[in-house]
Length: 125
Image (tube, rainbow, N blue to C red; front, side, top):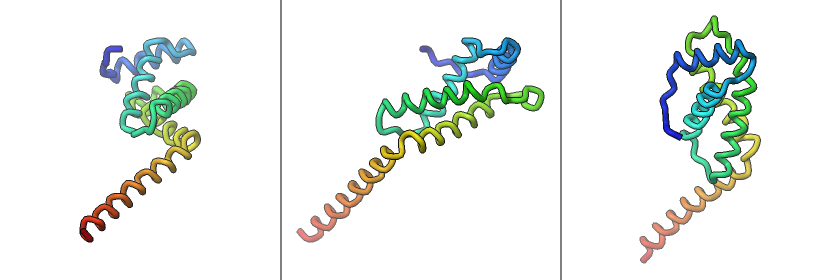
């Protein structure tokens, strides 16, 4: 898929069209998917499967809550969808991947201990 920046006016237009029709049109879905994927790039995952799990669960949440934005109050829906995505990622990460997070911290701790032990042995030698 070719990367295309999301234009705020186009996002708003597609949101209003989707709101009028009562369902998410394909172009609006593509934009929501791109928002989720772009926010997800800022997170470091332990595996590709974790990334896919978080991407789809967050996209599901965005598709559920998209209708709650008030178009009269917000001219630009982009920050609203980005915030929903961030909160959803945090919620789903804590819910679905806590064991992996613990394992990640254990690995970091082992690496630090190995560095400390290596520096001690080099001083003794």
